[in-house]
Image (cartoon, rainbow, N blue to C red; front, side, top):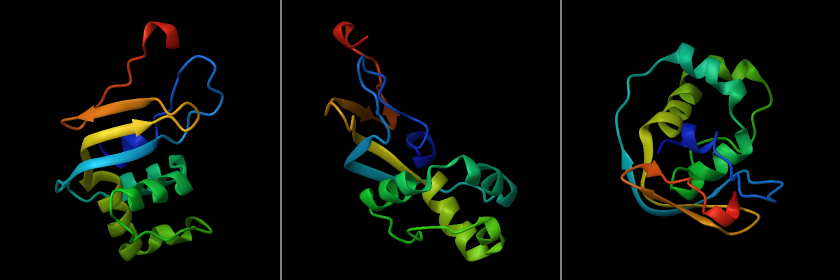
Length: 123
């Protein structure tokens, strides 16, 4: 599971008012090379919840991203775009879990696929 995916997921358990961001429990992380596309990164940047993204990257062992970004002018920096690309697309949570911040419910991640299915009593 890429951090791009993680940034879009939330817990939909019945009664949960704030199921984002899911906390990551890491067992195995893979690095998979992906072609660099600066236009894609610039288009995705405004859709990313930055604090959640940086926290997730640090959880899986990548601490190269700035804590805060003040404005979109940073998108002209090739150094920043390379770091953003690596964290967003090349780091994969292969094994582990995603944990609901409100209930503590664990959603397993196996072979890079998060299982977000709910039990009957959670719907």
